[in-house]
Image 1 (cartoon, rainbow, N blue to C red):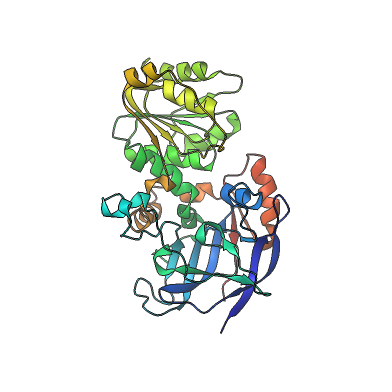
Image 2 (cartoon, one colour):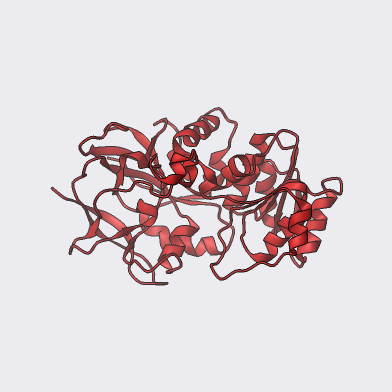
Length: 367
């Protein structure tokens, strides 16, 4: 028997998404249906809506979510009905070449639900990042569910499902921040500020937040930044020089580029110390190009890395970070700018463009 609920669907590029009835099939083997509690409004959802990901319309938007398992299919052992979970879009398969060589964070064949959700007329929906959580219920694979404390603030811990995890992981997992190191983070949006928080968790003693907009620095300092740099009007070499000023003239041990444009990457490359690490976590436009002298790449040593989903393993990282939040050691609630209804997502997209919102979080009423 199918289930009909309300979901936010994008039908054509750049047009507002619409709240419509969608249909969930009965869960197949290893599938589960979950009741959505919260879902963050992420830039990736706006990218799906605008056709910047692909053109597999219609899209069921939303992916950064907490939920409660309400129905399970055959052979499900990972979760039970009633479990509170964070949804993740990297449910590692254990069988692809990345998993077999011990790099599951790069899994090339992550699990998704066995059946598509549809419009009521039978049109198949493409679920954003295989989740589709701007809905009252959604259908996912059991391994897309990571169990967490049901008493935690769902709006806060749900952000571990994407943006906050990407930033924290860029610092800790990809950048490998160590005690006493210096870290510079270019871009003080949600992902960048999460990288600041991650640098603090890793024990960095100098944490520099950089952004065009100095209004973001109050939050950056609250999350661990020791220094701030306003980059408005500065060339990449000037930004790099500013970073060196706060790091004894050497540059930072780790520079996280949370923007992902040629200018910020160039600044990151030259703003790091010799043998330092550059981490690109801001997703670049497919047409963007950066030019660096090959001798500089050779002579500066170190590592140039990209960070996918913060190189996280959800089953390892989500509970750990949720526990730190419960202990008061990771202020995830600082990332929740506002709590909104499912019908308010389009307005949240507009506020997101202004740069003053870290995360709008949809909260759905629970039965």
